[in-house]
Every structure is written in structure tokens, then in C-alpha cells.
Length: 295
Image 1 (cartoon, one colour):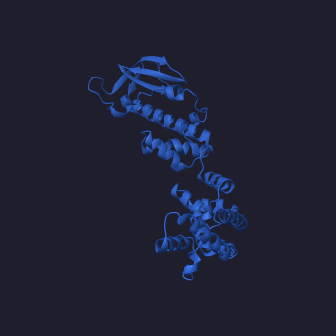
Image 2 (tube, rainbow, N blue to C red):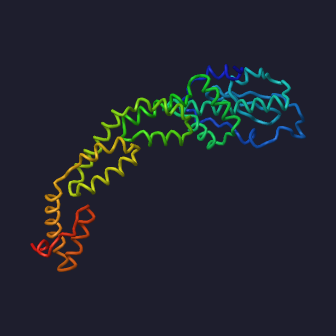
Image 3 (cartoon, rainbow, N blue to C red):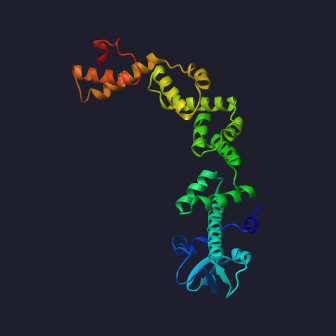
């Protein structure tokens, strides 16, 4: 365990005014610390206390803002000579410290995985080395775990959605969760739970698709459930149980279409449009006769 890491263990979660602090990155991210006017060494001219245990340090006119823990760790005193290497190390550790706190704040709101935090810090302008060091500390402290993330994610998906195991797996893979963690997390999504969810989804589809034929509803249910992430082995036993009184539904829909469409169409055009509508609902229209279109 590095000395930097031991210091970070003392950090509390970020306070509400965290965002108000300006870290003055422009000086220490873009400038080279080898300046002809300054030379290899610089002196600490001034300390100024800011909010949230942050200090502004002035090195011969160059200002940097760092956390008090890092000042204590580096044992910087007024009028001390500071080498280029010491300053670069201090700046690097302060950026790691910032990245650590941002990630910690993200974790305080919800469980997150390594990739989510890495992406957040990248968007904030931190480079790979600083991100890796900050996130590695969180992993060692037990605050960041892709294994725990996978378990929480699967639990929430089962509790709050109708998504099946394959859709859940795909999402976890997109977040670069290791297969072994995904397999372990999905063990709780048993076949019994999957069957209950499929049964519930089909019941909802039946309730909201009373105007479709049995065949049309079966096809819709299969496509819908596969897109949700369920296998055909789980789906099929429930699909075969869907059985409407197609003739009754057919006659009811035919009567409804004649009433509505006859207000606008007549003759062959009316018949053509009625056939189209019924066909779209999955009904066989080949046996329709001329008298079927008469009110």
C-alpha cells in the first residue's frame, strides 16, 4: 500500500460545495515546469487557505491549488526549495486526489462499475495514469467492485423490469464486466423466475391485443419476449397456450370495419381496405365472400 493511498483513506465524501472549488488546472496541466526564469528549483512564497481543506500555494509567482493532506505529506514549508520533480509529483498526486474524490462522489449516489467511473473521469479531462491510480485505490478500499456491481444490477433488473437474462448480460458486457462476474450474478435469475416473468408479459399482451388473431398475437409475443432477452425454450411453452376464439374476433372486427370505413369508401375500394385491415391483424381473408361486406 502506497503512502498516497494511506492518506486517501482518511478522505470523507465530497461536501455540497465541492464543485465551487477551482483547481486552477491551467497552470499545472498545460505548462512545463522547466522555465528559464525559474530554473530547476522554486521557493514556496505563500500559503492561502481555501474551502474544503484546499490551499493555494505560490512558488515564485506560480500558483497551484492542492489539498492540505498532500502539503503535509510533502512537508512543504515557506521558503523551502522545491525541485521540478517534487512539484511534478505534487501536481500529479493532487490530480489523482481530485479524480479520487469525483469518483467517490459518484459512488455515494449509486453503485457503479469501473468503466462508468473511468468514462466520467475521462470526460472531466483526466488521463489514463491518474484515473487508474485513483480507481485502484477505490478498489483496494472496497468502494469499487465490478463483481458487486453485477450482483446489484441483476437484482435491480429482476425487481424492477421484465428484462430477461440475455438482455441483462448484454448490458453488463457493454460495461466491460468480466464473464465470470456476469455468470455468477445471473445465477439468481432462475428458470422459475424467468417463467413467471414471461407468463406476466404474455398476460399483458393478451389483455391489450384483443383485436388480433391468435397467430398474430403469438408472433408478436415471440418477437417481444426474445427482444427482452428470454430464450425460446422458456418462451415456447407459454406461446402454445395462447388461444383466442378467432372466428368470433374476426366477425366482430369485420363488423366494426364495415361501420367505420363505409362512411368514406364504397364498393371494391371498401372491400379492399377491409381486407387489408383484417390481414394486418393476422386473419385469413381468402374466404371472404361478397355478402360479407354487406351491412
